Length: 276
Ligand code: DGL
Image (cartoon, rainbow, N blue to C red; front, side, top):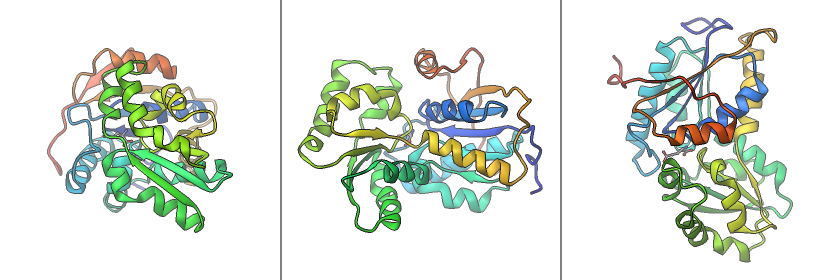
């Protein structure tokens, strides 16, 4: 591969609409401790999940272009909404490899389910795209999939209401119907949702296990870097740089400590118009 980010020491760039993609960064840091990681959360425009395909594609392309211009050797789309609606365009346009989170989430669900009935929760954009259902059915045509859009969860998480009666009531409203089904696996189809995992587990009850994309996504990235000769040598100590398009509030510290990430140095970066 040639291009601006082809050297092993170039960063792996990760983006999301806000702080949710840090759940993927946390898995990447565990699996790939030698890699330099640059994270960009589009906090100026979060949430993406209620917006149109055109807008999500444009926002994703703008953010990804910034990251590639900064020298990234690959881009990880740590947002299900952007993966569902923008991944093919990003792969077409960008000169570096691009990975998303939906195929890894599908793989996690297929590994976990015994009953063959899987539920998926996500934003309106992700659920409306049908991307999880398509991925699950392509691998296992007899699978049953119940998909639920949960549009209030990202704003509650970005507000830091992780353990709050309001969030509990919203989860009860969205998820109570799953308790009377034979669903045994719930896919957290939004990278923000692992931050709510304890509350979600309480809402669905003990017979439904939760899975998300993070660990499988990190494994896919590790394989890709090594297959392309782009992996940092095991002796290097990787760094983590966090950037946001609007100053993040105190919740970044809460999320960072929940995920064991160093959030001490954070930059704010304006998004240039597409193509600049
Ligand atoms: N973390 C993003 C996702 O996985 C949140 C989307 C949003 O901003 O609504 O879909």
